[in-house]
Figure 1 (tube, rainbow, N blue to C red):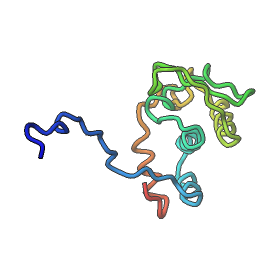
Figure 2 (cartoon, rainbow, N blue to C red; figure 1 turned 45 degrees about the vertical axis):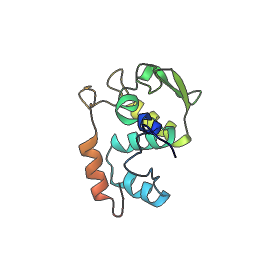
Figure 3 (cartoon, rainbow, N blue to C red; figure 1 turned 180 degrees about the vertical axis):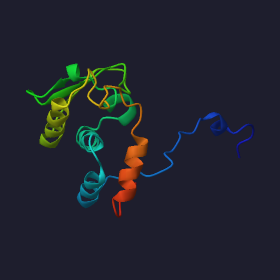
Length: 138
């Protein structure tokens, strides 16, 4: 038998996510997009199709980092989780959403209000769209 302090006590346990990661089904995505007003609908498409994190990557995205001709966008290292610049390919849906946003461009940031002010959060708008989308689990 072992005598003394338990050597495992000094091992730090990893934090488990509190919820399971769940992806939207195509029907759920469609209902959510139908319930979302612009520019939230564009933001949802871009985040779903590129994997951008909402607050630090999508809402801080500048037009200088969007290349619609090549179908790429760059996430600046200062906003990326890894602190490294990364390039993300754009789906056709994401390109279409960005093209629509570019037509109404009001400043250097992709997601801005009509007066050119940058969004700091879209939580309220997202919650409203989710509540209007029947059966959307988020």
